[in-house]
Length: 205
Image (tube, rainbow, N blue to C red; front, top):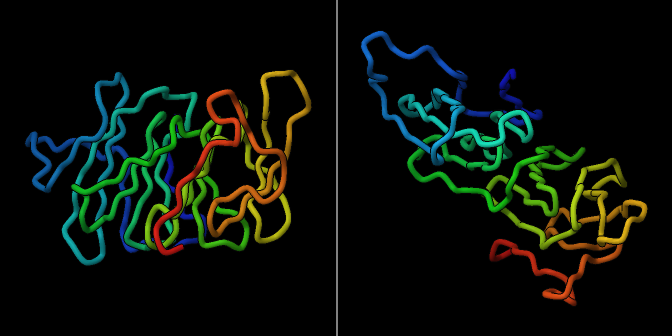
C-alpha cells in the first residue's frame, strides 16, 4: 500500500519524509516518538519543520488496508494529521510530544470541503473537523453505519448513510461547518439516546 502526504491546498510549514531509511548507525540522532500499541504494521515519518529541528515518529497501524493511513496538511501550517488505520493524531510539528488523539475511530474519510479552511475526518458513524486552532468540533452519532461524504450546497458539509437498523434508502444530512450541528435531515436516535447523541464544540465557537 502506498502511503502519501496530501496537502489539500493548505501550505504546510514543514517537509515530510515517509518511512525514511533507518540509519546504519542504529540511531536516528534526532528526537523520536512512538504512538499507538502493538501492531504488525508501522508507519514511520520524519518531519522537518521550518523553524525547529527535525524529529521522527513511528505509529502502530491497525486495520491496514481497510482504513485510512497517511499524512495530511491542516489549516494550521504547523500542524499535521497522521492517520494510522483505526487512529488519527493531530500533531503540532514544533511540539511533537504533545499530539492529540482524534476522537474518531476508525478513520475512513479525510477531506477538505470545497471552499472551506477545514479538514473533516469521518468514521462509520460521526465526523470531526480541524481548523487553524486545532480540533473544532465532533458530531454526535449521525448514522448507524456506512457514513460517506458527498457533494452538496456550497458552504455546507453533506454526508449520507443509514439512520436506522431497518433496511431503507440512505439518508443525506447537512452539517453546519461552523459548529458541526445537524441542520437538515433526520436525527439519529436509539434507546439510549432518544433525543439524539450530543456532539462537542470547542469553547468560544
